[in-house]
View 1 (cartoon, protein in one colour):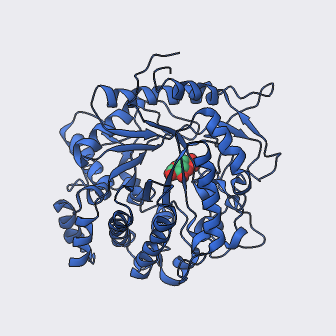
View 2 (cartoon, helix red, strand yellow):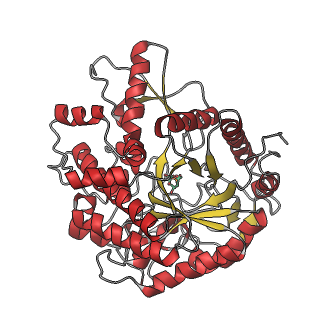
Length: 478
Ligand code: BGP
């Protein structure tokens, strides 16, 4: 055991999942088809192929998830046994608006989340709810082009309003767009689809399309914040940023400059969410690149009025970058500018393990955005093995312990205002990037393979017991 620091009273210890990765029941209760429902299984270094509709002969892991739609009562009971004070999940947009553009919401979908949140309440667990977690209605992509379109901005706002009005008494903490800044990696089509519902035409400039779609999301998010506060001023609506610090590979001034450019490029979304305005450098960048990003006067007013109440963020790993001589403007391009960091180890999926980076990222965001923070994802994807009916996941305990200790230093020594910690994932889930079950993050094991076969039995991993003590001691016993 390691001695940690006590977290502030009321600190929200919990765990996180996302609807499309756990619920399954992809057509139950009137649910429509989401983009996750047409993503085939992939694997490490094997991208997930995306169909334009669900094909009978194909396999889509998100169709079954871990059947949380039917098992949530038992699973939440296990979360309560761990001592969760909160539980993060998302509302599947297509359970509420199956196509996304209906005039009225689907009552069966609303009823499901009534029951889910009531079950949380039964155990004194605070729901932390993401509105858009890579679960866009497929129809909004195919019929409107995703967040290219103002109709989709309006559709999101209607979805948000229905959710706020239905759940404002049971859900106090919300987030708008999960990891909105993933699409800084615009050369990878998945973030563009998952964040913005973009399927690019060959004639389109991916980066320009990303900036324009991200703008409509940022406006929609700001309008949702203002709307939430009209419905109930106590609601807390946050951004959700993937924090992956990017370090200079050396102390060479050019490397340091390149890292500064990388960070501002990857996190300008947080600038707009938290400060309500675009940074000057980005407008100059658009001019230099010849991008025509449509931003109306009304958009700018909405952004100013709808700054977020807090910044939720995920943290898994850090990256490194170095200056390249053919890049005089220090333009950051994720696919070309990132280099391996020789000073940190890697996971089985090649993610660089860097607990200090969590503390670094927290300090960076707090100093830039002056908002409370919430760690809503932090975890270790690994191959778990069952031995004599147990899962001895010391590797996951070590990862989480090292990261929680850095988190606690950021709170106690650096004075950072942190609302809570919900590690990814409360229970084994379908991986977002690979669709695999074998890339396990959970504190609870689910007996199910990549093809969805298995008993579905839940097993407490060693990390379940470890985390139970962390929560019971409010962070002191690690
Ligand atoms: C983040 C997502 C989560 C989760 C996590 C782990 O990007 O917000 O949904 O999936 O990554 O990544 P993966 O599942 O790809 O291993």
